[in-house]
Length: 90
Image 1: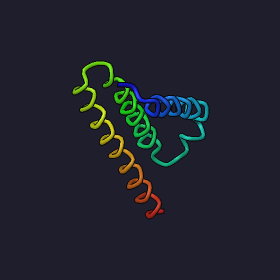
Image 2: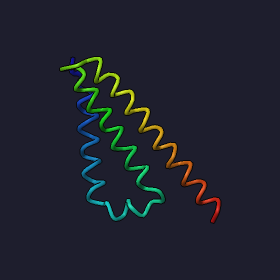
Image 3: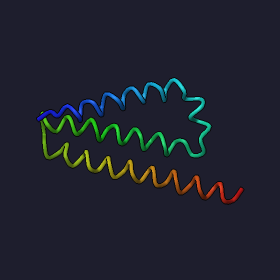
C-alpha cells in the first residue's frame, strides 16, 4: 500500500539531495562530511525501500528499510562523535 506521506518524504529528500549536490563544495568543508552525507544517502535508501515494500517483496524491503535506518543512524552517530573528538583536540 502506498501512503502519501511516504512519497512526499522521498520527494523532499530528493530535492534536498539536489541542493546538496549543487552546494557540494560548501558541504565538503564540514568536518568528516563523508559520514554526514553517507548517513543521508542511507536514510534516503530507507525511505525508498519504504515505498517499494508496498509493491513487491514486502518482507525483504521491510528488513532492508530498517537495516538502512540503523546504518544511517550509526553514520550520524560516527559523524557527531568524530566531530566532537576532533574539535576537543584543537
